[in-house]
Image (cartoon, rainbow, N blue to C red; front, top):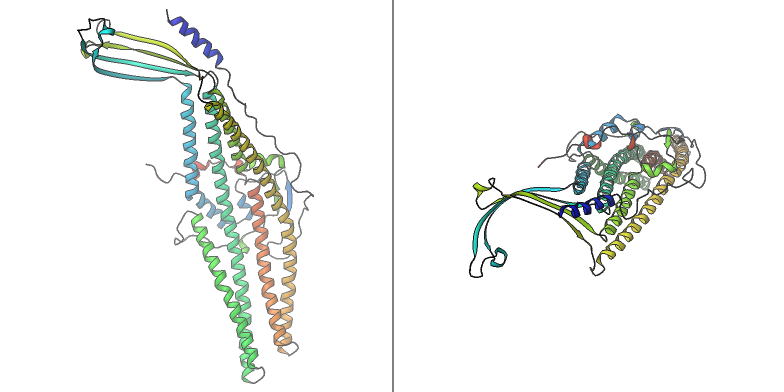
Length: 497
């Protein structure tokens, strides 16, 4: 007879379980506009003679390839990044973190299902005279053996479980995009390190070339000194210049060695292990057709933006969880089994036991704790929303900076290429004139110094175009959405417990 009221409670609860309190999450609208910079970008950019001097053309709306670094047309770079993806501990850690978050979603979803358990109990009991109906002077001691199935189910009337699952799924999405961010950071760091190595090698080569010229000049001066054609002070000046040039080499070589160590670690190996290719400006080609995503698509492409939005979604779901805690909680429970005084009699005779029930819990007074938790969840949502807006602003700033850098880099390289060409011609002319006494040695030294600086500036300008092009691809999201192979397959776990 008591079953019917319980059934009515359960049916009403199930009918009410279609609603979920708290806000329904809506993704923020994408920023409007058709460009990243105040003024339209110049396309194509300026061009210059020599390495990395090609003009670059922006292609608005074009998609970035998943392996964006392949646009630099360097097989060595492609192979190194492939190795890094397979062996990077950072990627392995991010993958493990994502898998753990996915399991947390499964844990949260388990609340949708009843909790069913089986148990066997063997107890020695002493019954109270009051509960057993015996006279106060008598007691009853007996063994009770029980085997039963127990079930309980909390009906998700106000959506607490659904909001919890929603929040867990948003957290899983966050770690998914954090993995993509780690992937983009890894590949970008390798590209930048390869470009830096190429730049350092060019600077070292330029310095060594100038040093060789200076040493050759010193040899000539020594011969002239033997015949009294030049004073000792001239020899000392040239020796000082040679020493000053030589002093710049150890610093460049140290940077090169440290950069090589960085490439090894990024590739997932010890600095002492061989196999890291060497990079020069000659084997890194500047991409000439530059895909540029539309501003409206950027919020869906940047991993950091997607991760920030996932945190916003999770914060929204937590508001729903905190709101549902203010409402009643309805739990259904039941038991079915056998009970006897001896284990051998457990399945004999009328030993069946069962129970079914429903419980309702409504918070009445808790010192304002639950409402404070709801307000805290709302404040956390406001914080996540503000952080998301800031992330959007920073992302658009990154793209704008990179686009503007492409234009200025092209202009700088053009100027430095012209300066290097003029300095080279001036050096050749000054060396010829010095042999015939048309210019002084001091003038020749000045021209040599200018040429050395021009070559260094040119190498750094060539590397800057490569680096800022890579920075643009990174700021646009890196094309991860076009990747076919999941990262979890590309980077297997390091070990299994």
